[in-house]
Amino acid sequence: MLMVNGERDDSIDVHDSSNDALNICKSCGSHCCKFGGAVATRSEVSAIIEMGYPNHFTAVSEDVFITDWGDDMTCPYLSDGKCEIYEVRPLRCRAFPIFQTGSGQVFLSQCPIASLLSEEEIHNMVEKLAECPSEILEGAASYMGPYAKKLERKISRFDRTRIEGK
Ligand code: SF4
Ligand code: SF4
Image (cartoon, rainbow, N blue to C red; front, top):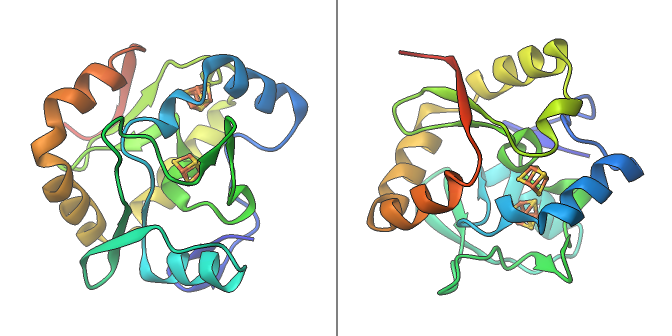
């Protein structure tokens, strides 16, 4: 189950829970869960709490929440290389390797799982990300600002292709 802007949405997940996808992410070392963790809307955080998971989020604005970062920038929901909230992880976690920047550009990270994605899956996810409130980008960008260099080093492990925005 995924809550997007308050509505249940079972249809989106660019990398599902198939063994192929899970094994690729395991081999990768869950890299994308180690540069800051999750960014979520209020409804996404509510869905996580309603499922009985602990609340590791900090509010950065009215509708933007971000997981507390440890010194190593690993998401607190990552445990033994697995996401503890996999079935209710926020949209931006589901979307990766497609991601937005604070300026609204959308990129595809050429991480190991990228080759499994069809053009249709990428297109659908770009559309879904575009529905997110702009506040979430601004709030996350502002929170991440002090970590920008460290984040860039981590994310640049893989090449990226710009797919939307100037
Ligand atoms: S960076 Fe890509 S392959 Fe690695 S864990 Fe994240 S989605 Fe999976
Ligand atoms: S919530 Fe799950 S998928 Fe998202 S960054 Fe944390 S461990 Fe990774």
